[in-house]
Length: 593
Image (cartoon, rainbow, N blue to C red; front, side):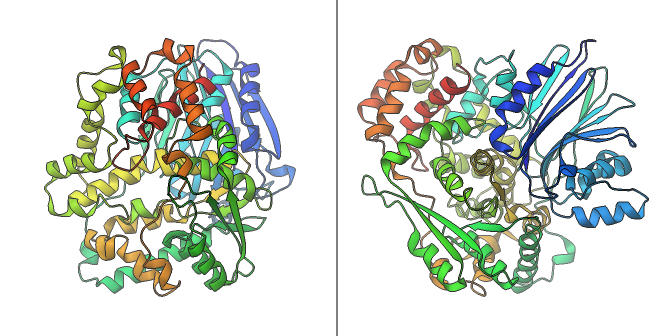
């Protein structure tokens, strides 16, 4: 797990190694264990390393294989690297390290860009071919590892974070009105390739981009699960599906134990993380380190779920760590969390993960986490109503339940220069949910959330906040074999028992029932859903600055209304609308001023 960056030029000039060095410096938190750089004329790579596999210097990056004429930088972890290494050794390849990075290099030489189809894991990488000048960029199937791009005539830069690209300089930081519409509509989700800044794009998940020496390039999507029933499963009972999914989940959890250092678990006390703990216990893990976080209650909202995480910790005898945060400490940590955001994220979970990651990283470097289960196994409240609707009606219902505001309401929020005549957010949802490969409306919504919302909200949140403290977070519910199987599973089995029915049935075999039958909870951070005190002051001040007025994104009268009643307008998902605006302005002032 690391941070990578680089520059490629196409106009005859040398790559700007000074700009690459600035990007490397911005990536220090993602890789506290070492750094490296490499250049060859028009191409330069930079890297920061978090040592998890092959802790020796042999695993350092950029990794150069002079015999093959290849150089790579890589961020992530390949869980089947040992099996792939053995296979490649059978093809005659010799290895100089024990790292998964070298497996990608040799695998690329052997399989070409199809190497991505052989990798089980989370990854973003860049590979340079010495003999052709070609550069290949790739991102894992579920977008767990990020890769941002800044293109100008004659040059392409890339990095693990958007702020790193900004540190390199010469980036158009003007606001993309379509991305702003997505941000304000879709709970801060801005689908790839867009970001809020016109000068920065992101490589979509499950995508390989091949860039030739002359600057021409092609992109290929290499993975696209089908949300349809298959003939071979026609006679499967509910128990058959439960058994198959349980085995796939066991395999996913087992894969994510691959490391040369200990692996812990972020334990929220919910079904998903509790299942991970239970499965690891059944794998024979003893003394497993688990971590939970809780916050001070604000405005009558409870701020922790320790009662549930304690049940799991006691039942499985884990080495459990309770982390409690008061409101003043939360307010003081906001600046760091915003600084760690590659893109602005309004979910209150972001700050929780930042604080949790800070504490956890003091005692362990790798953890498993339960993100993705709700999107893959239908855990959210907006899925059941879609089961009885046709596709177009389901699209409107999805937007009604999930979008923070509709297109008409946008007219109250954004100023004229950012207003759009059409509704790009609803149209994006319509096109995605109407596409082939999803049998029912529920299938279409699950596909949309797994491929788009999950990538640019929960997954990005976990990557940004954990890596800001040099902590590697692994997400077994996003094992691509498990996701493919879940996509084929009949929606009614996932919707059963109030949602995540298949997982709950599996859970009843493994974990205490009181964790399964509890009301659905979310990571509670009351001080952000209910704005008051120092957090409210921070938001109010950000929206009142000269920078905010000059940017002119929001109608002044709307901002005044929100500030006058800071907790009066909530989104359908109970998010605070003033926090949405304030967080965006705080992020822009931090990164793109």
